[in-house]
Image 1 (cartoon, helix red, strand yellow):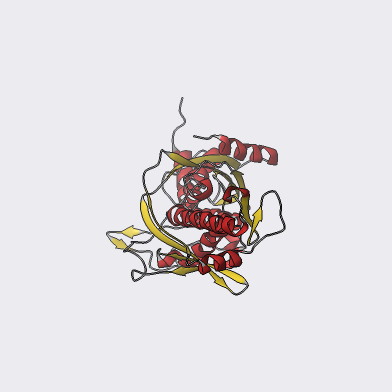
Image 2 (tube, one colour; image 1 turned 90 degrees about the horizontal axis):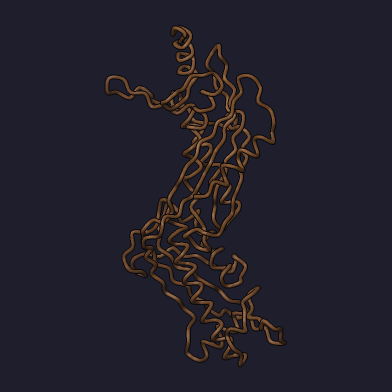
Length: 342
């Protein structure tokens, strides 16, 4: 377990300074275990096309995730092969091309499909270096891939493009191809640690709770795509804000009385407070390039952090989500009527 995200989040808030009356800070933490068992299949194929090379990644995974994950799989392959991501094409296959596969989904896409793509790319990389070594009369260990070319590590006049290497392999009747079926088994417990701090303002007269800011800290492993990583965090925090402060499905005598989105409130842009992220990037995760999961951790602790902050501000503890003005108001009135303890 790594406690650094907790310390970093608290340090960020201490540096901010202000703790005025009725505004209080509180923290909540989450441990999220990484490593889901699942199967996926990837096939990587390199083809010579005149003066260019096309790298195709054929994959099987859940259609709901294909549009969001294509870019990441492309980046994983490009990183291994030293290519620009635009040189990698991702094709979604079916059971005519692959063995039956349930496809990856949930929190498994990067973890499982990403590892399959990385393994397929690593195998293709080895084949490219072998073919280039024959072409250059060199040792494969003395070569590297960078910028779509094969480069001698010590320098040299010949720097064949991958298209040239693939064409040379084709003339010898060889193809550069790596089918991989990846089954992810059990891993030692590796946790994604998340700590969140909320600052709130509570109106004692009405019970209204306003979230002033949120700081979230993550023990992240290797970050594969910084923009997507931050997007997952922000999206989870906004979902958590709705869960914690406004989303309520009311049931009376067995009937749902929250009949529309006019009654079931969800956050809008005006409800979102300033969000700050603290990242502890340590390459110790089970995913590709030692990444950890990020998709679900940011939407769990915030409800507890907000409820703790309300308790710290006005002395009443709300134990049922959402933390609404009505619940805080009634709790404050009940506390005012209770006899003082001796």
